Image 1 (cartoon, rainbow, N blue to C red):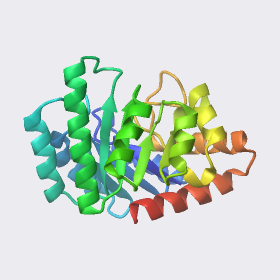
Image 2: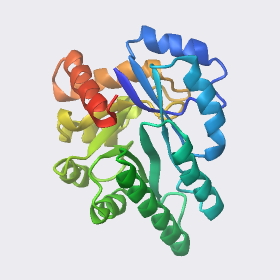
Image 3: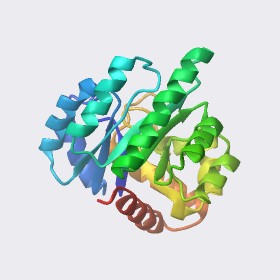
Image 4: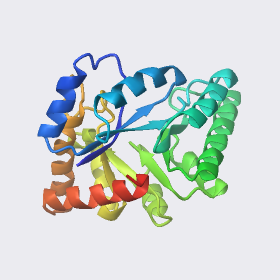
Length: 246
């Protein structure tokens, strides 16, 4: 399996060597880390050096941080960093309610999309409570190589996006989330990847999430789609390797 979205620079991962050992033992063959703040990059490099060829990195920008200076630091990071994608970036209408702030948030998102297209890098998108709006922005900018991470929007919007070639990563919270189960049921397996979003979106409420839990998400998707878990693993791994060019 490939965990396409995990925040391993999170302070909760003080036992990272053990976390990585458990991930390997659970059948996770690669992990793509995500950072959302340029200040995380130094730690991300330290983590990457712990297991080269097993860990990869996407660099993004927290859509709730609406500071031009921070965004410029993020753009500079893209020139320095050895990354396999841009993200997570996007819209967050759950935390950002003010109209003027949403306008600025969208401007940062559009700039990030253009950067991804210019650099021929895949885009990992955050769209909390803004699924439809985020997709409309992506369409208007001509984005094609897109992974919608932990999408919480309408399944119908998601299905339309898969017809444009967009991918959706299903988090391990699919074990108990009816919305994620509906998404997994409706979308074709050929448009899905697996993620944990560690340390959050845990399959076991109240516990820290980690990449080893990816198998729980794979099993639930297999149950929902009435296929063998091996088929879920095979297809999602192929999708991730092709999308991120691993």
